Length: 358
Ligand code: ASP
Image (cartoon, rainbow, N blue to C red):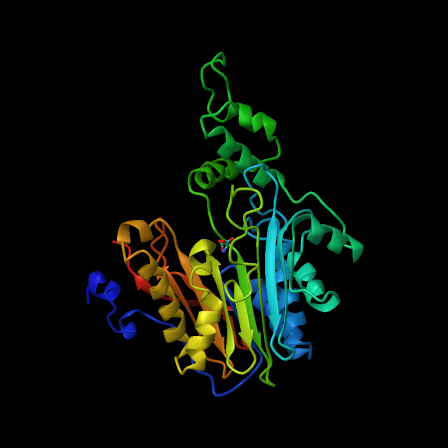
């Protein structure tokens, strides 16, 4: 089967897949590939009898507070003004409740604030200044979320734009990174090359985590610092219920990471859950969502090559899958993967995909 025939709508079975079937509900979690520790934590919580929503929030919190993950929470790459703005949403299957925050500044754990919106307001979503005031009213501490590593990346990006930032006309001949190294004396050597890479190719990244327990209860959460160098106030799909995350206790749960604008335009997570409601397997459901995204670009490979998008699905019976637009990233030979923990520890599984990079 050629790539072109895949785009033209050939059978989904042609795309490699890793969907698994379970015999019935059991304690389990799946997440984006940055969620190894997250899914282990979720399983610990589920095995100790905690609620599925408490478990997914505790799981993603581990990634939110980790400065090494530059796509989520503390240490996330900032907006174009150098300010970290965080988005998150979550849903609790058994009570069918939802909470979300968008463009939240100064709080490391937006998923916890989203949970409070669910629990302590008559609303579903708070954004910006109001979300921060609400968090502080509930005892959250406002903190600087921009780490030195993220600030280095932002400054590198800012100086790459050809504006007045960076060495002026009268500056001595270029001394490479020497000056920047003086400005960031504690930076690890590899940070400079990484900063140039993310300045040139603004990365995406986020964590989505979906959980099921042995009683068949489900919850899901997505949390992110969003697109690097975004316009202040931009929110992607991650805080949008039905796009970044959706849970229907009768059917299953779905979530997304990657270029949020594409997901919002197909209401991805809701679409996937509805697909499963109407009988699709988890794998068929996520691939159908990916195909809708490709269709929005008339299957134009040249434009689709500019981004990637991931969908994750967990059915109420334990079947799960993930699918991406592309089999791998532009600069890696490795297949796209996601994390599965069905009780025997977090493991990476291959995601299905629609298109192969040449
Ligand atoms: N989906 C996130 C957003 O668009 C970013 C990402 O997952 O990389 O904000």
